[in-house]
Figure 1 (cartoon, helix red, strand yellow):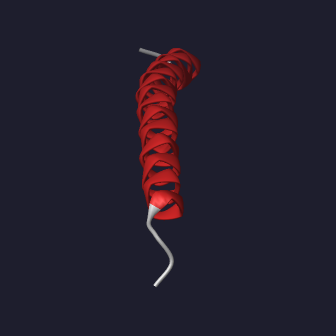
Figure 2 (cartoon, one colour):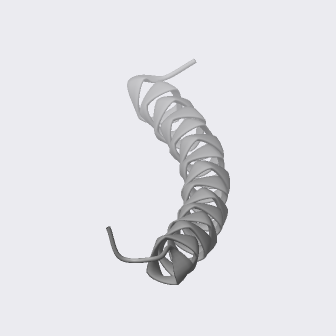
Length: 56
């Protein structure tokens, strides 16, 4: 292979690798967003429950 061909192959491999990593990061970001929504809902429920407690 020529140097130019090797460079193209290396660039293509890098692009594929970065695209795969980006997909994994997108998936993880979506998971974290869902976890934050769940956490917010639980915090709201706890806050509401605390608000219903009688004053000491």
